[in-house]
Image (cartoon, rainbow, N blue to C red; front, side, top):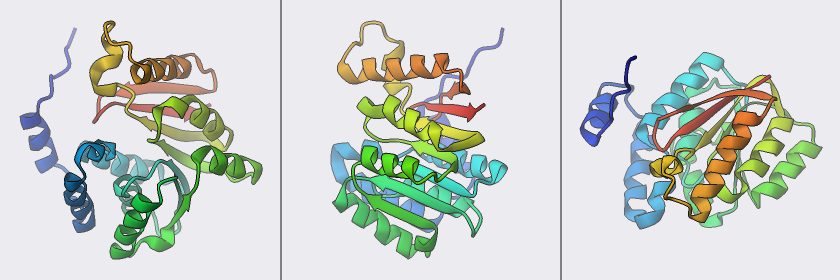
Amino acid sequence: MGSNLQLNSQIENYINNNSIDLHPVQKEIIKYNEKLGEIKKMQISVSQCHFLHFIIKITNPKNILEIGTFTGLSTLTMALASNDDTLITALDKNEETSKTARSFFDKANLSKKINLLVNNAKKSLEDLVNSNKYFDMVFIDADKENYIDYFEKSIKITNNSGIIITDNVLWYGDVANEDKNDRLTVKIREFNSYIKKNNKVESLILPIGDGLSICRKL
């Protein structure tokens, strides 16, 4: 039986250096986030940028929903990879980081493809459900306590065979450590178990960044 390669920073740097070059504005966002201290961990990893780029190129989604935008790296990554007629609806409650994200979208000349709604994500999702708007792809990367609720609402507005991707499902590896039982670790475990048992999707977890759950709606 084959075994998985144990990644370290040296290997990750090698992979990133031999993969797609990031757009200058993507690099600028990463550099900006480095100055933000602890909250910079809310940013997706470079390897996740590469993954999102390829999954969008392969699936060609016309309508994308993002739950949790932060300073806009994941949003911009999806906008850069998608076709000109693709629309991204992005949800975030933080006005300050949303203002920063919009400035990066403007700099990359991609604002026309991104509709950033600054509001409570639960409320925005309820509005989308009631509006009968449907999406080909959903990316969830927001507060972990509400992951199950976000997923349940998202699946209602995801087209058949649409993809729902959720970040941080390995939670620094703590989900596999039985000695780790803090609130957020337990919440992520509950979410992963919920996905595994959900008969509306088929799913897998990929060890990219902090772990991505990939679900296809049946």
